[in-house]
Length: 462
Image 1 (cartoon, rainbow, N blue to C red):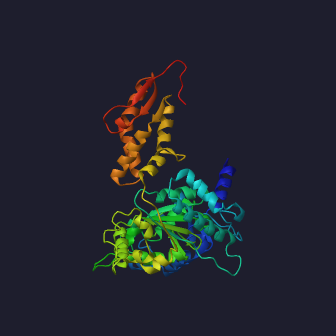
Image 2: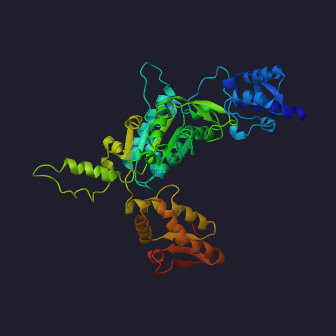
Image 3: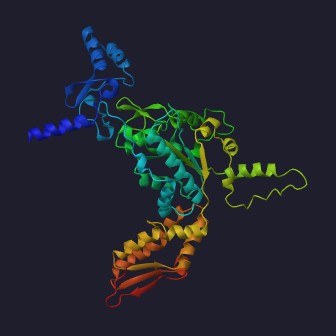
């Protein structure tokens, strides 16, 4: 029994890196560790500093403060903090000596763009252009990662910027893509990012989330996907006289991440501190996808188009573009610069594309066609109670109309359905005679009720 425990411990030691209990550096950075017992390890540098202090033979307060001052991030040492096991989320997967990086997706296994789009079609309704662009960009990116630039021609990264109204499917598109490719995905929100040294998440925290998604395996993380949502929130603040710590400064700080650099990342934490191990992650092969709704961008586009078409006898009317649908698709880099995105940042996002606002027909399709459509979920729930659930075509149109009124895209569908399904989900388990429920437009508009059919002999829904 004792031997089994010892073997398990040895296997864990082989799988994860040892971390210095004082400076929190992993052995890949600090070198061989000295075991002190009780799960405590000390690197040679920290041990030498300790011995130098002991040799002085004088442990007054000033000496202790001077000793701790030499160690980055540590102000005063508490021996209770140094003992014990490292939390699971802070353990770093060890890379074996001489082991080469293995691509997450083999060159032969990378699905062609049309195959990627076919898979996306099963889950995402509409957005044909966006799905086509993202399929090609991801295909090219993973070809680049798999070949690892085998010849003298270096292929550049195809980082993406997607622009689309809220609820149009930006996050859902990326989540579906990562699931289909089976690669680590981190989703971060740009609203919480600030320049280093200010309250908020450091820019490196987005890479830290990817490392966590890859199970603290650096090699896997270096080939993953990072989706940064609400990217429009880090636009330059107009007419500000204070330091723009959550706007232009964040854009400047993200430049090295997007292009590819060695970043020191805290393991199992969003910020660097004395008790968190740090590991180096290279972002050269990480695909960055940025997304945002960019409110008021249409006004900038409209202003530009009106200026171009307002000269001469054949000038267009100023209100020509007021009612134009999908005006956002006419966006240019100049429009984004005017919005507040700096040119260096935009230059590192070469693939820019837009998503359409959802129409009534698209919302109806979203309700019933995807593999995990909302209506299919409720049909399955009632099927478990041996009740068949159906929706009239008029009822689905009524749900889509209500969603359009809320102006929050596909997100509105769930809340609308939850609202009118509450009573049905509550009442049906009470009566075992109910065999079928049909949702009507009248029930959605609260002018009538659903059609309820009782069971007949031998009736089973399905």
